[in-house]
Image 1 (cartoon, rainbow, N blue to C red):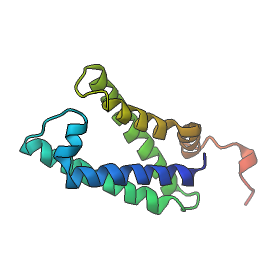
Image 2 (cartoon, rainbow, N blue to C red; image 1 turned 120 degrees about the vertical axis):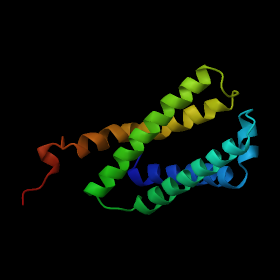
Image 3 (tube, rainbow, N blue to C red; image 1 turned 90 degrees about the horizontal axis):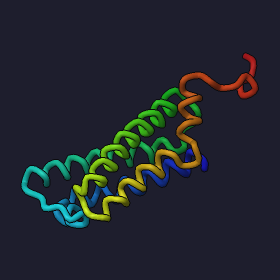
Length: 137
């Protein structure tokens, strides 16, 4: 899968979840069989705002040429989605949310590992490119 496609999918998923958490957090929580008090509603809206930021970042960066900035964005997304995956998985295994919570686990894992792209980008980020891919100056 190409980076542009992965970032487009990432942006679409993030904007959908982000907007729903900002606009209707109580209804979004109810999908997971969670009840929300005022503090949870605030945290949900803040989470939604962060997701909208990720959506804008990935949408705007999808056409970026190979650069340190693009590699940093991919690495940051890889790490944040990896942490999110572990947190969601632990919550799911401890029955914190209903079966719909598996969708969050699946989304985070599929975005993180799609086509092994993230591992290739990390290898590229830390400078493990082969000399065949580099042109002489």
